[in-house]
Structure formats: C-alpha cells, structure tokens
Image (cartoon, rainbow, N blue to C red; front, side, top):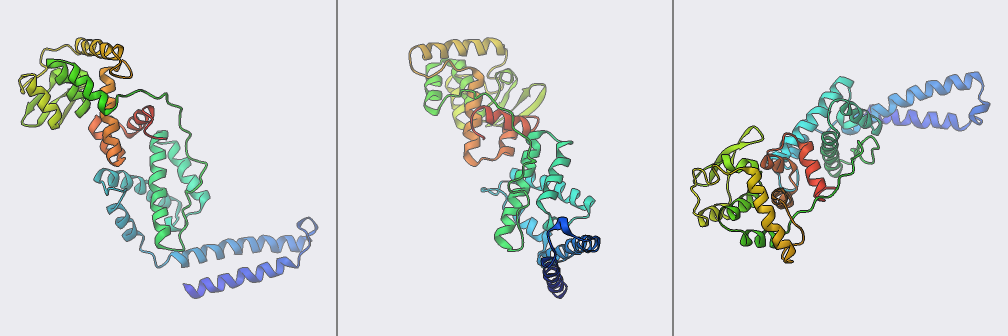
Length: 318
C-alpha cells in the first residue's frame, strides 16, 4: 500500500508539472480541457489512495473502544452510552456511503450531519456532532494522518435562544429550608437535594434511603441523600409516606408564600418557587461532572434534548 501511495504522490507531481505549462484556463484548447478533466479524475483517485495508505495501519475498532472506555473527563458510563450511540450512527451512515470513517472529508462530515437533521431533534444532533468531533480530536492526538472533519462545520443545527431561569444558590437553599417548618422544610429539602417535583411528593414511599413513587404518570425510584432524609426525620414524618394526603398545589403555594416572606425580608435574592429548588438540584448535579446523560436520568426527563434545554435555561450550557 505504501508503494502505491508513493506512486500516487508522484503522479500528482507529474500532473502538476504538466498543468504548470498550460496558459490561463480560459485560453485552454479543447485538448487541454480534456486532459485537465482526466487529471481531475486521476487526482481524486490518487488522493483517495494516499488517504487509505495513511490510515491503513490504524485499528479503527480498537481505537474506538479505547476512546469509549475513557469517554468524557470522568469516564462516565452514561457518557459512554451516549458516545457509543452517536458513533454507531456515524458508522452506519459511513457504511451506507461506502466510506471509511477514518478517511472522512469535511464535506462528508457535513453530509452526515444533514442526514441526522432529518431524523433527530436539533439538540440530539448537536450531541451526536459533539461525540463524533471529540472522537476525531482524540484520534488526531494519536495519529498524524487523522484530521477532525467535524471541526468548524457550519452544518450544526442552530440553537434556539432560551430565557435564563433563576435558581437559588447554596446559601439561599439553606436559608429557605431553615426558614420553613415541619413538612414544608422536609418537602423543600427533598426537592432541593434530590430534585423531585412537588407533584411526586405525595406518592413517595421510603425504605431505608430508597424511595419509590410516581411523577408525571411514570414510576420513579432512587435514593434520597442524607440531607433529605434528615429533614424528614426532624419533621417527624413517617417514612412509608411522609407526604401522603398532601395536595401538590397547596404545598407549592404554602412554600411560595414562605419564600416570599424571606425575599421581602432580604434573606434571599428572589421569590423562588418549588420548581426553582429542582433547578438548584439540576445545576448542582450538572456541575459535578458535566454529564448530561446522568442528569437526564436523575431528573427523569424523557429525552436528552429536554435536559439540554433545561440546563440552557439555567445558564449552565452555551
């Protein structure tokens, strides 16, 4: 293969030398135009041969597996799952186009993105592009022959402007929980430290640190952190159903009124709502490792696109 690539490189030099003797293109004779067309076809073939030779020694499957096993800064299992799905879509598209992914050109990368835009949400396409671009940037550091074809692409779907939503800071959450009493303090602690919606609270049952319940028509389950469990115990609420019989709307209004008083007293910066406590939880968890897939799971969102929009509204993603 290297010998063939060397010959292809020499052919390119020979063609360039011949073309250098030609006049300006608008003065070409019919014979020169015909020869130029032939040269263009040979040049395309030669470039493909050279690209194939440069990547022939790279074990694509092994490189991809190594990348996936270390995906993201934290080697998160959720990030790996997202990257694996994105690269799987890239491989499937490349196979249909009969393209070696290692030899992709920027134009082909754009074509891949355009194919996704007709099948997936804009947020999902952006995540796929991010995963593919991360992989190729990683390959660049390991193999001089590889260039990231996704870098600088203009095919990426535009992002919609999202109005930033306010969320309390750590000190404000502590002030809010401290300023509430009984079941309200416990409810606020569960929303702020585990991100449950107010509507889910009346349904939760706790065993040890584990809880089950329902939120927006779906079964939910997880683990409550010590801060939430301690608040429930301090309020002397039964673990089997600490908020059973509580009407979500009533709970939200009672907490909102209490926080309004704290706001008017200058103890917090805004009259936060119950959902703002969930916002605090989302921000706190996302800042730990920037793992969008993990936060999606924790918030029980239906899709990554929802989680991305959610965090954008909180000013956590560009």
